[in-house]
Length: 306
Length: 317
Image (cartoon, rainbow over all chains, first blue to last red; front, top):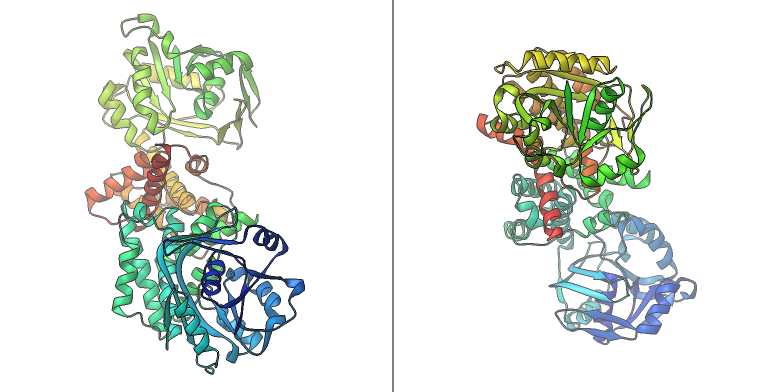
């Protein structure tokens, strides 16, 4: 089973390195600059679950001629078009694509390009960054990888790929309802990104303000209501796990979207908050908190582009 | 009459230079660094109403004598510091305040009036509103970038003020060409501006963008009008309800598509500086609490500023 990982950034680099270390046949599709860096220094991962130093197999876009069995996508949503372009030569008759993007909207785009039978559902729960010097730093003690069929057909690759993931030591969950897992994360992430970007501060700092706690709770409730209206009701246990993380007074947690905002970079706001807001409007669910948080990011994008 | 102006920033520098240029006896109380710049360059004003280049009379804190030094007394002191600088401003001007001295504060908000009255006595504190868009350039000159330079002043409701000094001050300001409105309800004028200012600051800081951009977002217009309604309600419970036309003017300016208007507090945030949030938005929140009214938009805007201040103070230490 040959695995292609698009990019060797934070998420792709982390899980790709774990799969490689577990004996998987993993190739990273990277830009020439990153390829040179990886050839020189290897791929380094620093993690509370154990550091890794691997010599990865690398291919650049021009060199990509063969097809792969499993293609892992972890690009930013706004790069999905060019990512689809890049992996197209690697997609063969039997290939499956495992997207680890935030949100849910990318599934439709992948399915319409590559066909429903080729697209699995995936969710990565991890806090990880790519350092400017090229190494990958895992920031928390969570590295869950949830995988599942989206219901078009069950690929024969699901089983061997699952075994490899289990062997790699990541917290692997084979889900028979991966669509729900995607919505669970979407509700959590929309709340985290919405609150920490709107307030430009971590969860702990927001909780120290007058309205912070109520804002976070109500935003999470709005997102849960939107999920519910889409037939993706968050289980009570799931909702309370999210709520506890999002209202932890000692938490320094921020969304990576806030880091993007502070670096004046493009964000996934449209893909995450914009999509959640569009679902809410389609289902006529009042979401005043979400609307304000989304407005903050819309204003950011307008200023960034002007 | 001798007038002392605390600071030579945008408002103090502009109006002080106008009064000086028309022959008024104006002295600026400034920090040593600002004094050096003003001695070297003079005080330059670039304005659609005519540029000015004056050689200002300057004083620094160290040059002020003790409280018993009669020569240091002024007839009127104009304060246009930031609200968070008021305590040190009051210390600085203390030696200049004699029994007949009038104080004219031109700060944002209303809470400074009580603080000044508690320190110097209710009777000598006027109310004032300055209306002009002013900036100090990096070189230290003052740029006036709209066609409005109005001062609204008056003695406050229950304070008789010092009618003779007030008349002289008014005459001096009028002679400078600045538009002077002598208000018989200055507290209302201050609240009118406060409602506008707080709504502008709340919206443009929370969304970190000017009014035109705020209005282009999904929830911007609703947030701005929500803030105006909440601030107006707080003004009303303070006994200073805005008139229909005042409220409409305020709402119109804050919902004007394409407007590049943004609060100076947003500029403060963007350079990582201190802000007046606690004395303005915080003051409104405290008034809400007292009246049991839950101002959602304002509470959120205030929380945004609290988060900013927490982060700023953490990164300083």
